[in-house]
Length: 250
Image (cartoon, rainbow, N blue to C red; front, top):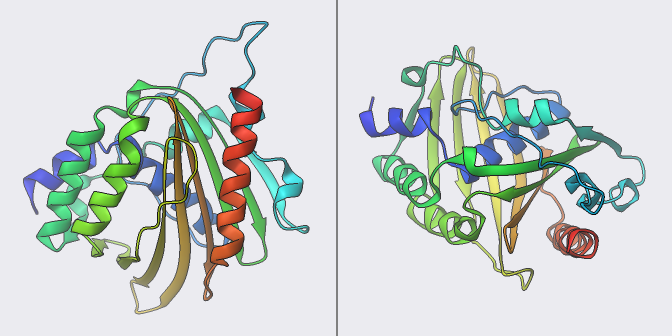
């Protein structure tokens, strides 16, 4: 077990914690379970004022998702838990290969700093059959470094294998695109094959999009089991989410 990776697992940066949280929400929506691997993070909503618009108002209206989607808000407590992990998690029980991915994780941690700097967060999950979408808005923290860090991490680690006592996952990242949204944006395709203890395999694909707009970060993930999300539809949804957040919160 690499000591550098253990340090990363104890203090995972915002980008990786957000991706882990979104993946967990998507997997739970598709009938699987996952536990993000990160140190607990306290997310304290910003103090309310008469003029302040709640961050949750910047999330997409439910009707923007699939017509039959069940859209569920994610509470502050759930977000705090999703951005961290159970206190009994043992980072020594998780390994990541190859070494270049361990190095990429450490570089991301150094670039993004402390996720506790996040000042406010709001999220929601939309489920429809074996597909799901997760949207997360955060304010504060190292939002202006997320897009470049994501791009660098994918370039350094296009494929990673994560081994845990529950099974192994092979995660592959596709080519990063940069839509003209906000101050900076990136979209990356993700495929994963999970082999659980006993040999049962589960495969799925997802699209991960991030948009940085000032000190606000939008993260949108769309995933499905045994099929790939519609890339054009995802790009439209990400653009709509970014525009709605800007119109509502700026």
